Each structure stands twice: as C-alpha cells, then as structure tokens.
Length: 277
Image (cartoon, rainbow, N blue to C red):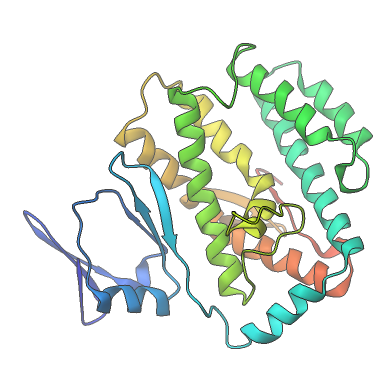
C-alpha cells in the first residue's frame, strides 16, 4: 500500500486507487500487507483510523495520532481538571443508557427479560454503586444467547462480539483524539494497562449495536463475511439530536456532547442515539 496524489494505492493482482478523503477507517486484515511511512503519515494527518489485525485476522492494535486538535494542550488540562462529581454523574447516565439500549433490544426480539432490565434502570444509583450494569449484563446475554452462555467462553459468538467491540472502540478512540483529549484518562475505567480507558467508558451504550448484529447472524463459525458485516455497522444509521446520522458520525456527536457536559458540569447536554424517533 502506497500514496500517490492523495490516493491510497493498493497493489496486488490488480491495482486499486481510493481517495483518502473518502476513507474514515482503514482495516489491515492481513499480516502480509506492507505500507509506506509516507502513507502512514498522511493517514494520521487526515485523522483516518488505522486498525491492524494479527495472524488470525483479529484486531490487535490501532494507530493513534499524538495531536488530534490544534488546542490539544488546553483540552488535556480540562480533562485532568474534570471533578469526580461530574464524572460520576456522566458515568451514571452512560450506564443508564447502556441498560436502556439492552432493554430495547430484548423488547425488539420479544424476550420477557426486558422487564428485569427496566427494574435495574429504576434501581440505578450514583456511579452504579450497586453494580446494576453487571447484573443487567448477565440477564441480557443469557436471554440473547442462552442460559449456558458466558462472555469468557471460546466460541463464534464471543469472537463476533469481541471483534465488533474492537471496531467500536477504535472509532471512539478516533473521536476522542480528534477532539483533543487523551484516551488513557477515563471516567470509570482506570486500568493502568489500558491505553483506552476513556474510549472504554464512552462506547458502552453503543455495544448493543454489535450485540444485535451478532444475534441476527446466528453464527456457528466466525469468518471473513461475518467480519465485514460487523465493520459495516459504522455505516448504519441511527438518530441523534433528532437527526439521522451514520453510526460513525453519531459517535463523534455523542462524544462531543459528553465533553461539553463534563466541561460545563451539565449532564443535560449529553446526546444519546436512538434507533427510531
């Protein structure tokens, strides 16, 4: 892969040209691919997310720019100064909307467990101190994939979920860095070995988009076709702020609203997505 006149050049059996301005995310699905440093620099400048897969074709790393905004230094100072109270309030809203999205998916496929999740939403406390998120997840995944299902199992369903979540996380990291913030400092997630604590926080309400896709695929094996279906989720459309947007754009709008809420100490500014008006 190379760059020529603002076009990504892909040389294989045939040569293909793709205008960089038309690319949002570049997924390198094979370890046999080689790329020039010139191309990598231009991808970074244009804030194009690059996801690299391992020999098993699973996402293993991503390219994150050092500077995503002209005022990155000021944004990082703001981020460090976010008070625990507003971070707790924002995290509570994020958990509430995640469980709400899970409930709506169960309701959509007519599973009675959605009533249990409604109860968890009503019981939610500040910073989810009683772990309603964890209880909801157990009920939710057992309803979707069977009572014997566990997120720790090595099977096609978990492979699909993990792959889809990786794509989502990469898109959130791109939006965070592009806005001038750093991904290491989270609201709730605080793992010193996780470079993407903030992305892990913000992506939570969007996970059910992946869950719905994996449920509908009814997969026995997780292969290339299933991977491409999950990557295409970023091109699906949802409503946010009363307008229809692609998921990739909705992530950017949602992240921006969260940052505004944190900086202004006002959770009413957060804009969550919906699947219908």
